[in-house]
Amino acid sequence: MAKKRIQSKAATPSAARGSDDKIPVVGAREPCPCRSGRRYKACHGRAAAHAVTELVRRPFEGLPGECDWVALRELVPAATAELRLRDGLPEGVPSVTLATVLPMAWPALRRDNGAVLLGLQNDTPSGDISRDLADVLGRALKAAPGTPVAAERMPAEETRLQDLIDPRAPFTPVVHDGFEFWVENLEHATPEVTASLERANAAAIPTARLSGVEAAYWCHTPERNHLRWVMPHPEEELLDALARLHCAGAAALGEGTRLVGSFRAHGLVVPVWDLPVGMGADEVEKPAAAFAERLAESLASNAPLTADERRARGGLTNRQVTLS
Image (tube, rainbow, N blue to C red; front, top):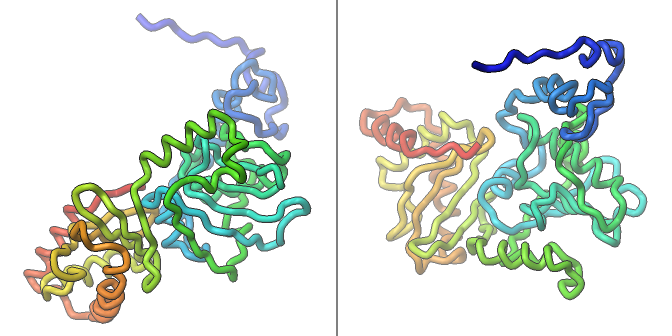
C-alpha cells in the first residue's frame, strides 16, 4: 500500500515566500529560490514548465530559410550557418554561428576568441524550440570566453529567435564532411572533445545540399542514396500536387529513382526519393530543378483529384513519418 505523502505547511512555496513574489528562474535541479527545500523543477519551475509545454507547430516560421532550419535540425549531420542579429553583435563577440550539433551535446559554446556556436540538434525544455534556442543564445552571448553553455534551465523570457535574428539576412548552410569545425585548433582539443569528434565523424552520413533548389539534401547510405527535400507549401496542397505528379508518371527524378514517401517535421513536409547508389548530388541537380517546375504547375491546379490520384495521395499519407 502506497504511503500517503505528508507535507508540512512550512515547506510549501507560498508559506516560504509570499505567493505574489516573483521567483527567479534557476536551473531545474537547483534548490527553488522560494526556500521550500525542493528542487526548482518540482516547485515553482513546475508552473513555468506548464506554461511553455504547448507545442509550437512551426517554431522556425518567420526566420530566413525556414526550410533549411528544419533540415539542419532533423536531417543533416554536420553543417553550420552564420547568423546575423537584429541589434548587431555585442562587444567581444566576433560572430554567431548555428551548428547542427556541438561536442558533448552542448547547447552552445563561447570560443576562446569570443565567437559563439549555437547547437540546433539538442533536446529542449519546452514546446517552443525557437524560445529555447533564444534563451541559450542569450546566455551564450554573455558567457565567459572558452566555456560551454549548460542546458538545465527553463526560458525566463518570451524572447524567440525571430526577435533576435535579422530577417533580412540570408541563411546559407554550409554542409561539412565532418565535425572539425568544432575546434579552432585540433591539436589543443581536450581528450573528451577529441573522443566526441571521432565518434561523431564515424556516425555521420555523407550529405550535400543541392545548389539549384532550396532546402534539398542528398545523402549517401550503403544500400542506396536519398534526396530529402524540405518544402514550404501547405501540407494538403503539397500532397495533392505530389499525387497528381505520381499518377502522371512525373514524380521521379530520373531512371532508377522513386518518390517513396515523406517526413513531417516542424509543420513542414519533406518528400523523400530513393536514388541509385551511383547517383551523386551533382547528378540530381538538373532532375530536381525540372521537378520543381513540374511541382509548381501541379500546385497551381485547382482541379479535384481523380480516383487514381486520391489513391496515390492515400499511399503518400500512409508512408508519411512524423519526426517532430
